[in-house]
Image (cartoon, rainbow, N blue to C red; front, side, top):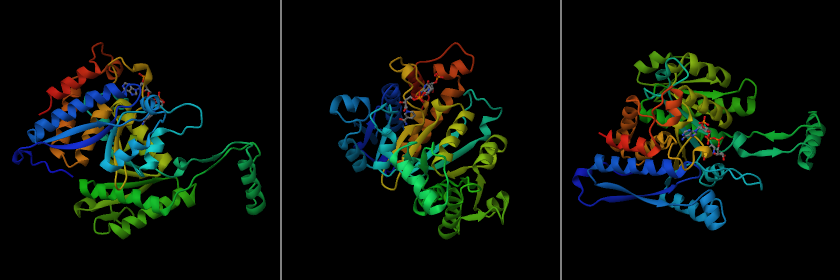
Length: 399
Ligand code: NAP
């Protein structure tokens, strides 16, 4: 962590940050983001702290240069520095190559997908009061469907598994089934719940909600709920109260966090009907995947949705959206999601003033109606700014 006591320092202290520009629109939004982060640091620390950017390769550029989509050097460098910021990566089609993003998260054990979702005035939204939603989603990033245990219909493995299920457990499956397994462990559940609760304590968040489908899948989703509650009781007893014995108001007046749980389908309704009753959501992988995009849609969509994948030693910051290939090279893509991911990175580095400065400048820019083509189109406006033009305005709005 770096202290933001810039005025006492004479020599700049460079922080080496590995960055992956990414594919598609990645290089354009990364260039915009780096410029903004550099300016914010210059302003917030009076030049005492600066980032030394170090490009590391992944995706199409890595493949063309090294023959590998995700070179070992890249993983080593990110692991050594403990962080990175990345643009979106194309998932190579065919050849049995798994998503580079999933590989990156698994190789570096980035077990917490962290997605803050809040509204910036000026952004077009499909709901009436988007400002009522302000949540941070902690989604488990290593198990559940991300474990990737699947067997194709008719394969030896699927048929063998069916035979085992039939002969040993008396479970009959139709012969034309593909089969997938959904493992959820106590260890992985407790570490994501711990990360969510620690965050809630640090940020003074009033509610942590465990989102699960435990009414149907008792030993995976149901166990996720039980283990998360157990963790809250065992490790956070001085900070939490539970919904079965306290209301949100009672917890808040005692200076405690209310811990509750919601079944996943109800949670989708709640974020629309009672968005302001929630603040931190902790979920297994698949629920979180759906929920994070649905929440992002409420506040303006993927173009403005930042994210981070965080482990105990390493954190990688990235936008939620993909490579948006049809906009690549046109200087029209929306860089907001990556800029806000960059603000999360500054906060992670302890550079709180610079981080707030970036978020405030983005908020100011959007509230003045300065927006890229994607948002302008949805607002029914003809005027829009380019990717680099948006970055210029954000830089002018840093204060
Ligand atoms: P996508 O790249 O997110 O794009 C889907 C649509 O979202 C775009 O066509 C565009 O909508 C809009 N959009 C996304 N980002 C935007 C931005 N910055 N500015 C303006 N509009 C933006 O999703 P995809 O088409 O499903 O995936 C494309 C590739 O990205 C795939 O190879 C996928 O595997 C990869 N991907 C990577 C990541 C990652 O690296 N973390 C995440 C997701 C997907 P309109 O067409 O309506 O204008």
